[in-house]
Amino acid sequence: MSDIKSADTKQLWRVTSPLMVSFLSTFAMLFVDRLFLSLYSKDALNAAAISGTLAWSFIVAWMTLAALVEIFVAQYNGANRKMEIARPVWQMIWLAALSVIFFTILGLFFPNLIYSSPHEDLHRDYFSWLMPCGPLSVIISGISAFYIGQGHGKVVKWLSILGNLINIGLDPILIFGVDGILPAMGIKGAAIATVAGYAIQAIVIIFLFLSKRNRKEFGTNNYKFDFKLFKKCCTVGFPTALFGGLEVFASALFYTMMEKVSPEHIFVCSVCQSIEMLFLFYGYGLEKGIAAIAGNLIGAKMQDQIKKLVKSGFILILYFAIALAIITIIYPDPLIDLFLKQESSQSTSLPFDTHQIAHYKTLIRTCLIFVTLYLVIENIRWIYSGILTAAGDTLYIMISGTISVWLFLLVPCYFFIVIGKHSIIFAFVNWTIYSIIATLLNFIRFRSGAWKSNPMLSEEIPSKNSVTP
Image 1 (tube, one colour):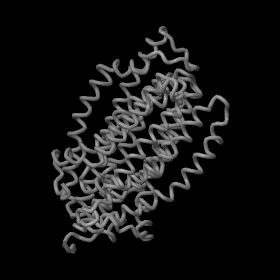
Image 2 (tube, rainbow, N blue to C red):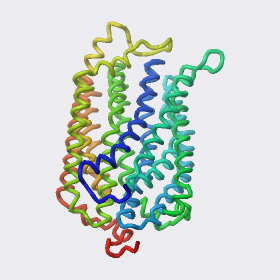
Image 3 (cartoon, rainbow, N blue to C red):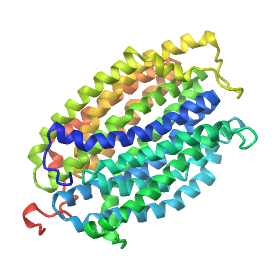
Image 4 (cartoon, rainbow, N blue to C red):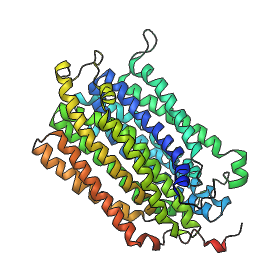
């Protein structure tokens, strides 16, 4: 599997399917958190959607930066420079150490600045207790790139499943407590369970990375800090990392706006985002797989196979679109009903009774139609994003993506919903329009071929003929 020289559908599926399972496990962890919180308190669910999304905007930026070393790993692997594969990975481990300072300061001071109202205690607690996930996610993402870049996604898959099982096991215990043994911790308990899942993943993946076999074949014990390579990795990864963080931050602003409009707007958004989160795994795994294969093809000087890789990606998206439509459009009620159960005795600002359920369900069903369209279109965007990323064309991704999310998503939502007081349905229509524009921008860049001449990685990766096995 480490020699990736094919772009057909079977190869793409072999590389991406373990990554999809890995992301499914990760997003299922967050979905389960939201589900348990919806049973504990609808206010806790809304707070997790708002402050949790904001917290993850910072975490995603750092973990995306670390994950981008997969394009170095992939191109080193494609060029048969095995003993150098671990060098960029170690630079991201050093980055994780540096991130401890950032996330510690962020967790201690930032929540009190932005959530100063007494009724925002839930927001502050969830944000603060999620911060340890920051350094842990950087370690996991950086070392996962070691496996993903070589096409060994199964390691990452089983690791994510392990973390998810730990989170699922701890969630009901920490959120609801155990009579006479452990008091209910609510939203704080959900955050602690998530951190515990990430901590176990970090410990296991470090152990695997430093195994005797990896030390011998890939030099994973070469922990030397290389400033030049560190700078190179950060230079390539920073634009995409910044955009990833800004995109999630934009989502956080969006949910904050919805909270200000009405309890109905934020509740419907929280439910739809939670369901959407459950299906993001496919596109994320596809993007990572596309980037891994494209990176290997570029490293092996086989760029002519990229168009075939795009075609294979579209075939996989077609299967996903059919399955998704069945679950979220034709038979959405089983998922929706999970969030419409009566909560515990915790207080809530939402008028949630049997007379409201039919109204909420109708709104959510309609919004899920646009969530489905959004997810399918995003998957197409991620195909092109994966190829551009593999080629080091990350600056374009940052500029086009940032302009799109702020100009075509946040601004229209603010004027039409916050000021204009339109239905929440309009917000999801706008999400779909934004996704179409962002996808077109990536497609135009891919068709232009400008990414083929990106010099960012050329000095690091030699031509195939110059490689000495």
